[in-house]
Length: 343
Image 1 (tube, rainbow, N blue to C red):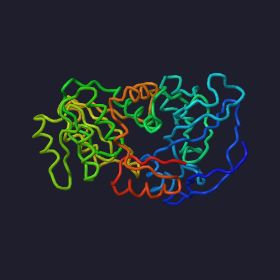
Image 2 (cartoon, rainbow, N blue to C red):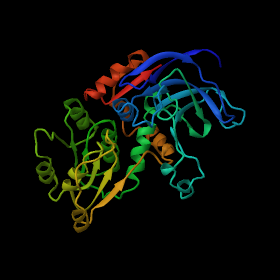
Image 3 (cartoon, one colour):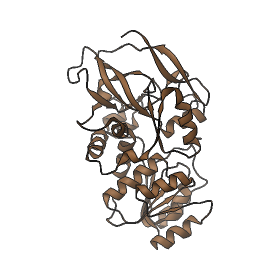
């Protein structure tokens, strides 16, 4: 397909450059050309901009955007299971299938991982190229503004699949950004007990309560450890660090025998202080790291189709592509949770 499209491009600065560029052409017979219908801004996009490319991981002049929905308008010659007109969402991290980790059934650890919208062009554009194996058809009747949440929801589902949570168990979520909000909603759906959230932003605090949190503590104004112990007695059975820098805090909040999920990614790729190995040993704390999704897209789409999460409530605003940097600023200031972008 020939022509020019509008795209939001990472140019090495802390803002995206909205420019006109040629529409990409199919390279492989397994490629698909999508007309992007909707995309959303992720915290990873903010990290890329703040770090000027994650230390060189993100090439300059890459189109960002890895949470998006598109309509298939062209398919490669090797594809017979997708057709023009299909609406799909994109699993942006694509394992090679043959490295040692892929062979060990750990595809999210793949050493040759392709990453659409991070290492190669993504969905902040009018059109996008993606390999067919990365595409998941959207269930009939699922709105595109809900389907666009498939990627972050699949990542949270992957994290929660690693732990056993007792019904009625108290839980703490550190951070009420998009991922923290999804954790709250999924855990409430799963039937846990009291959900306590730590958050600074008043906007995100109010939304966390709407998402299902029983109490939100502001660490600038309250002693988080005292607040959690007052609500739970012994501490939380599960603590989720959705920020990426609060491992030490999580250790102080989890009860003996409990579990910590480390999910968030720190901007500097570093966490919090020195961790006491002895404390983890004596209290038999289980630590689970969770990185991206692990073939959990089908489950995410099924959950979104059933609509127990009311996930569209997390949408703070909807913008045209030309206003994408306005949405980025809202997120940086904590005055939004999810910003939806229309090409």
